[in-house]
Each structure stands twice: as C-alpha cells, then as structure tokens.
View 1 (cartoon, rainbow, N blue to C red):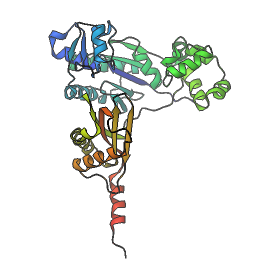
View 2: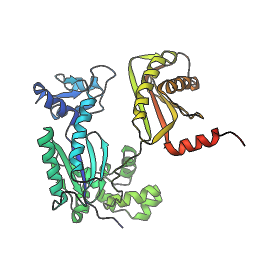
View 3: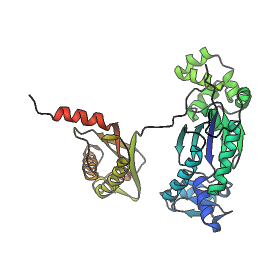
View 4: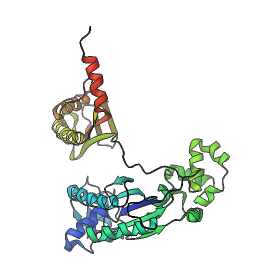
Length: 361
C-alpha cells in the first residue's frame, strides 16, 4: 500500500552557470560553460543560451566548443557555489526539517507537515521559489507530487523557473505518455529490452501483467510494475551517512605509475581534510583509484589493522597500493584519486581498539 506524502523536488536552474551570470553581468544572455578549457576538461554546467547549441553538462569541453564556437568558458568556483547552496538550504529549513540533498543544486523536501502552516504543498513550493529568487537572485524549478520519483520528473516539466504539480488523482494520466526511460533505473539497456517487447511508454509498460514482468525481470519486474502505477514508498532521507570521502585529479599529460607519488600525497591531504569534517565517525579503508590512458578504471583498497591517523599515513598507504597494480611498467594513467571508506562509529572503534590493546591477564 502506497504511503500518502507531499513531496517537493527543488532544482536550481543551470545552477553553476547562473551563479556566474549573476555575478558577472557581462556574461548575461551569452552562452556560458562552467569548465576549464582544454582537451581533458568536461562541462560542469551550461547556461540556457549554450544549451540551444546542444551544449550539456558532462560533455567534453572540446566538443562543446565545436558545437558553439562563441562559447565562453568560466573556470568553476565551488567555494562560491557551496555558499549559495547553503543559502538555499536555509530557505528550505524554514519550511521543513525533512530535506534530502541530491547535490549542491537539487533536493527533495517532505512537506506533508510544515513549519509555516501554508495551506498546500503547492503554496510551499511557490514560497520557496520566491524566497530563492529574492534572496539569491537565482531561479529554481519545482515538482510537487505524492512521492519522490514523480516530483523529480515533474520538476523538469516547466524549466526554467517553473512549477509543475501532480496531484494523487492525476498520477496515472501524468505517467501514461512518458517514455519508459523517464522512470528511475530504466537506462538504455533496459529501454532496449522493453522496446523488444513493444514497450515505449509508461502506459505500454502498465499494460503488462505483474506476473509477466516478474518472469522476465525478476524482482526488478515488480519494481517496474509499481513505477508504472506511480507507486514509490521511499521516504525523504534527511540524513545520509557518508560512504566515502575522496579527491581525484585528471592530468594534462598521462603519467607513469612511478610518477604519481606527489599527486597521490596532494590528494591524500584533500581527502584527509574531508574526513576530518565527519563528526562521530571514522574511516578505516584506504582506496586508490586510477584511470588508464585508454580509460580503464582500476581501484585498489586496503584496511590496515590501525586506521590511518594523519594525511601522511593516508598518503603512505595509498602510494603503497600502487604495488598491487598489475599492469606493464610503461602503462600511463590520466587520472588518480585517493579516498577513505569503511566508516564506523568512533566510540565503537575506540572500544574495540581498547579491547585488543589491553594487556593480557
């Protein structure tokens, strides 16, 4: 049985690019890509003026420049973006404590009950959007729906600076004409499998019996059946535990394994700084990530008996993990990353350490 909730999905419009255009009037109305110019750079965000030319986030910068020769490249400034994100978060918190950030520029909010007493979820969404516009001079789009996945789809419908509401009695009609690829978890591979069955839209999917979907796709078949009917009971998770803190870098020129040490140690400093911001939890596992010149990704990890106690310890272990990379000595690498994972509660870790370190009686 589906749980009745009032969920918002708030999505800042072209966030990084909009911040740049807000802060530099000379960029307004022009195609802007937040990215470093160069062969190894990718677009972090594109203004709506750039999107007209087909420029999109995650696109190689070189391709973006080919699509839009007049594209203006602006290096990303994540300190500034995080400051604006915190400002937006403070606006959310005036209305509810049930906030699930997905990134710096989007979040789910459960407004089934609010702090403000506004008469509806739609009124709450409008109040939030108005406050964002007035206080940050940026715009946000919002989706309002009975659950998370519907709210996220809805927030795309009237972008930019729009609002779209899906009321409980409208759910199936809203979903029916949508391509199945709009459902969460339905990627290109699943889309192709469903196309073989003649399924292109959510309405087509709904026409299949649950038993047939389960026979073909197992447990995922049941999930597809639920999504096609707009059923999703996942609650807004206001606190998400960190699974890993990491830092990585892509090089201008590919490097040999033996040349990576200074980069590994620099990234270990960054990762350790991120770990220090965790409260009440510590990480025990060191992770080294490498990407080869031909784009193969390798990871090596190690959990020492005593956790790393400093950035230097982390760097030592990460450098040592190179010995477990079994590739030809002349292999070159375009990216390296250092991370910490395996988080445990600090008090329980100390208790275990005291137990094993205690002298035998």
